[in-house]
Length: 200
Ligand SMILES: Cc1cc2nc3c(=O)[nH]c(=O)nc-3n(C[C@H](O)[C@H](O)[C@H](O)COP(=O)(O)O)c2cc1C
Image 1 (spheres, rainbow, N blue to C red):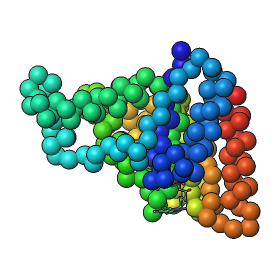
Image 2 (image 1 turned 135 degrees about the horizontal axis):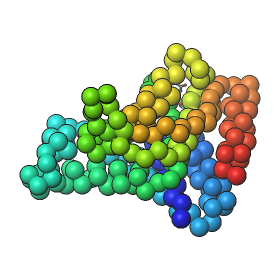
Image 3 (image 1 turned 90 degrees about the vertical axis):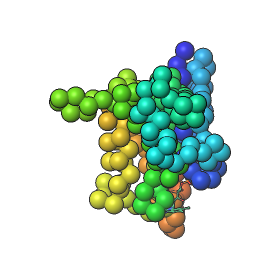
């Protein structure tokens, strides 16, 4: 049985445009894979805390030496990593806020990037420890940035996923959502057609 993990990162939760696109993909994928399982992680409804020194130290402390509080911090991170590992396919909603990724997504990333768990350093540099899997990224933006130096999001997400071992990444863009003159609808129509093709 295949598992799809949908990650909503919009401050508008499942009503955000990036979540709607990720949800459209998940619905179509479910129809094409009736035996498949869809897990939805919503970072607005269920926020991951910011990484603190206490949490970082807990991750770095050997499991058998952790205090109960440190064990709880590590367990919270472990469960997010296990959820990601359980997914054959990931549908990540990616809104652009103030030229960057949503801060709840950064907090999630800070709980996924764990030395010795999702990556390790070797003599030849860092090695990702997660098995590769398909990640679709549904990027929603008010303006037009794809392919320009202002699109720092795409490179950042790709770099992080590559770092933990995930190479198979595909971006679906819905841009110009704050623009007039039919740009928004045209962009959403193109994204919907792309989703139809990808989820078939
Ligand atoms: C707080 C905030 C900051 C935003 N900053 C940008 C931005 O820097 N560039 C841009 O193109 N759009 C920006 N937008 C527009 C969003 O990218 C757009 O509304 C998109 O649909 C957000 O995704 P969501 O609907 O899934 O939350 C911003 C929107 C909000 C609410």
